[in-house]
Image (cartoon, rainbow, N blue to C red):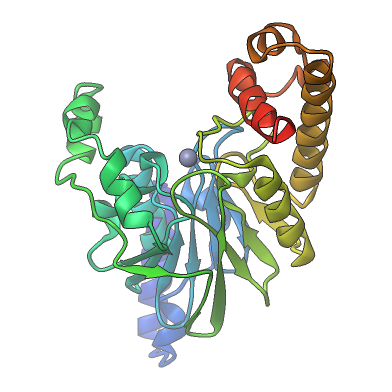
Length: 311
Ligand SMILES: [Zn+2]
């Protein structure tokens, strides 16, 4: 990192020495992901994602001519502070908007690090959902983890979205377009897919994660989840960033479609034999997905599949 800063300073000195007038382009530096630190991926020019492993909450930023647009606020306040530092290595432009892909605190709990100035956006119901789930002891609990965390979480408070949209919203910032698409009943109280049509990059929310059994809340409806995959695939994205896990492609949707379809088939067959939900939860296995993370969430997935087949 130190080397980088020195190089940048040298670069800036050279530029000012040469009296380069194109300062607008100078204020945004094209970075490789390595320069930003561990866990960062360069998705396309000006589009970066923090996704260190299969399970960590992803968060991303997009540089535009006018300013920065973020997608999700990262899980740990330490990640968010790192994210802020990464943004500042790339551009000195303000963070204009922060789009949430869901309401849970592992995506939204650190709004306070970016807002102000960022204006936060999510679908209708997001603010109410966040207020319902907010843990007022969050900062105290985090501060106990380490001195570093205690520092990072300073100033913590819940900031619900400033802007809520219904169904769809188009956000034009500088030369970029972000299409926000409400995904119904897929994960939290309000889930948003963010589609960048020119760049063909899709932020897919936690409707799908990377090879992980998802903690399905009671409000999740599997047929709606499957419909969301169909919709997101129809956009024909080149790169898909899920709510958790490393950047991937639409194969993520194919995998989950296969999984939920097989799960519902097996639950359906067992229900048809007269088994109870408890018996199904005890006996049903999904050996094809033995390498997926979150195996302890299979029973919750079975409950949701049960609701569908028993309808
Ligand atoms: Zn979530």
